[in-house]
Every structure is written in C-alpha cells, then in structure tokens.
Image (cartoon, rainbow, N blue to C red; front, side, top):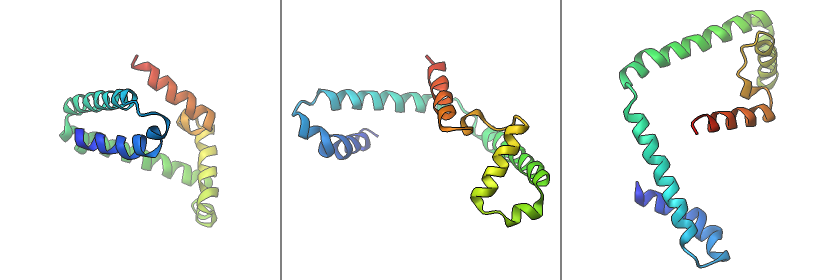
Length: 126
C-alpha cells in the first residue's frame, strides 16, 4: 500500500505541481502520513464489519427498500408517464415526489444541502 501511495503522490502532487513551487519535501511527506493514517483507520473499521451479514442481510434489505420506494413513487407518477419521460425528467419527477413525501435524502435536495450534510457527517466523528 505504501508504494501505491508513493506513486499517487509522485504523479499527482510532486510531478504535477509541487516540484515547480519548491524543492522542499516536507509537505509531500505530511500528505503521505495523513493518507496512510486514513487508510489505516479504514482498514481497522473494515475489520469490524461482519461481511456475511453485510452481504446476505444488510445490502439485500437496502436494495429491497430502494426498490419498494421506487415502485411506490413510480405508481404515484404513473408507469405510463414514466415510460415517456427522459431520464433527466424522470429523475426530477422522482425527486419532487420524494421531497413531498419527506423520503429524499437531504444531501440530494441541492448542492448547498449536499455540502451541509457532508460537513455534518465529517464533523460528527470529531
């Protein structure tokens, strides 16, 4: 994993822009340390997941819930109407139905809401 992170830093930080600014190596090493800490935390959290339950129960339940939600809203809009709409129009209709029923995730309402949700989740772990 360390070699992969080194390659990413070299290609996307050092060679792309950082070496043009300064020959200093401190910032790339700090970035590397942060990335390695994050990967270590992700690895530790993944070890705590019961993979069998995740794959056989949790994901199946989530997919079923999403299909039920889609079918309910498709029926409310009308199956025939849904078939005539472009994918963008269909997405907008579904979005409005989900907003009206308070079932749309707050991050999907607007870009501003997405930003707020992201930072509330990010700061939640602090």
